[in-house]
Image 1 (cartoon, chains in turn yellow, red):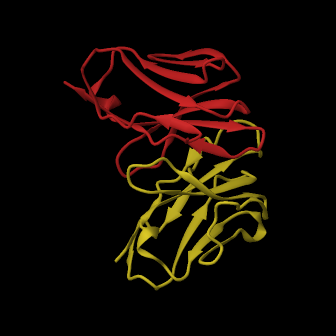
Image 2 (tube, each protein chain N blue to C red):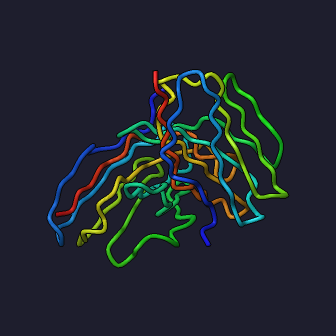
Length: 115
Length: 110
């Protein structure tokens, strides 16, 4: 079974630039999550999709972050414009069904450095 | 007060030792209690999870949940150098959002 795929693995950008991350969840998984993990902290949920609908985006800084999941499969997370404090690892996770059990499958993450 | 508190460590133990990792929480609505292992530059990997309270064992790993004290534990028996990683506790309630602890860094010395 293929895992959760994320790209790119690493990205360095200057502040005020824009950046986009891509996630391909495990085939058949309806629920997709984007997490932000700042160095030394646990992951923090940014947005949660069920198929192509948003379930929870209460912690997404909507003035600069956006995410979409067209056709209920792949997803992209965008930051525009980036700030220094956005430096973090962005993790994508997927689950078979919303609400039943934990997020079992995480991707390797995209490490973003904003300079 | 954070919803989930976890001592960041680091915790250093000799090979073969029993390791005890703990978290406390404040939200009584949490129903799922998880432990993830995260190696450097990798995504979290689900080790074990418990629904509601009680104990669960899987090989060298035992997870315990005490809902009356709002306290969860992960025990690792016969620890190995390959167990060196960051261990994240996480909890999930009726609102489906998962809250993670900050993680405890564990080093097992050969």
